[in-house]
Length: 119
Length: 119
Image (cartoon, rainbow over all chains, first blue to last red; front, side, top):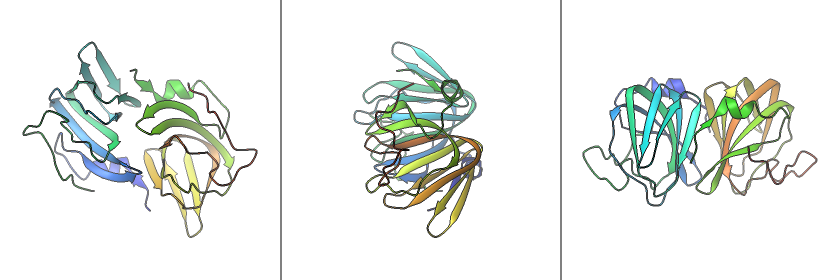
């Protein structure tokens, strides 16, 4: 059992859209990720997903609205809801979601990450 | 589906050791809580518990060590591990834990909170 300093962990990687596992919480993983640019529309059929913003401003587009998140804010995206994250500038975020969650959900592509690193 | 600004929610209450529910994430609740003083030794037999520090310094005593947490740090306390949170000065924290989790775990007392408020 060790504490995790978010900034220390964020200093260990620079790649975008590649979540790193930093904790195991019941059936979920705690992950850190850096975003820049536009991701892909996708949904997670069986998993709610929490995005907590550590740095920067993240736009999440939904089919019926846009939501802007800034440092110190989180959103829980319910299972089944399509979303598209867009980071005009670099964003650092913590994600909490079931261990079964694929980053691209139902939209498998070159962006899909399997076997995430633990840092 | 709404975003949550941690500081806006923290401004809504002042009592200590009384977690407020601010989100539903799969089988878990996201909670905000303010601590000051010493809590009680307890454990959660079936639930891992995440403490993320938003403000202040939290000491968590375990039977074999002390861990100090500061702003921007989290710890996941595995199920079954006895712990005692102590806040010498006011601490604001986010907790993520299964919906079944009682704040005082196996140590029911006047500090036990049932039917937590949603804010």
